Length: 160
Image 1 (cartoon, rainbow, N blue to C red):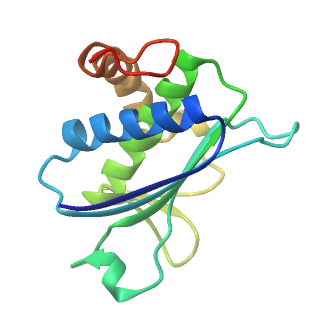
Image 2 (cartoon, rainbow, N blue to C red):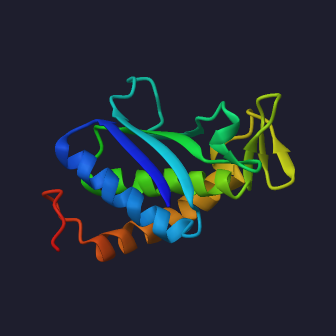
């Protein structure tokens, strides 16, 4: 597998947890993927920003794709989150990575989002977007399975 995962910003513990959580999510959500390039940015979000995480395709070169499916992504996550929220948000954003890889979610040339075969306006309320509904539906199960299978503890070290 050609998996590249860079984690910038945050504390040593947050970086360790990010790498562990991302590894779990890759194995769980898209185990057959052989090429993936992730750039995880742990950062302070602006006070007026309601978001605590973002996922976007970070691709501009043809070699960043496998056929038409993107393989290079940027995930941003708030460094102010507590441990459980940090892992939950990473799991949520990795569901979006899965959606882009499987081409369930795509960005159109007009700047809108396409979920499966339906195009959604950027005016669509956040919680009405089907890709967000799916990510929220999966995040808690992923969080708990990640905690149980990777044995992340509060110190940020694996118990193994």
